[in-house]
Length: 154
Image (cartoon, rainbow, N blue to C red; front, side, top):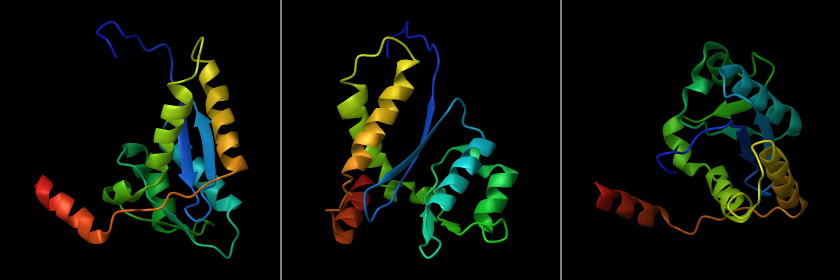
């Protein structure tokens, strides 16, 4: 970004990964409100078979902390859902961040976009391409390696 960079519009990408298969669920929105987050969480919950557990790792943004979102995430069964939610400090565990890197490196940085309106189509095409042959990400670091790295950082 340069000093004269101008925002001419944005799109919010909500994404969640099935860590067993690598399949990614996405939703594009013009905003990032609590209602938008809750709609995406409910979309995920509806798309997963009832006999499977859904564990969410929310980001550190405030949109998932609205009263309606908090109520649903704290007791999804009472709200008709089956998700459980980990605390936002666990977000470093979220493998969807790795998928965002793939999207950025292999589609967004390499793409030719004539305007903001082109981005949703590019993102959707990439997600469809990914889901045609999804690959789960596999952790390579051991717990000991991670703990040692955190210790070095302190």
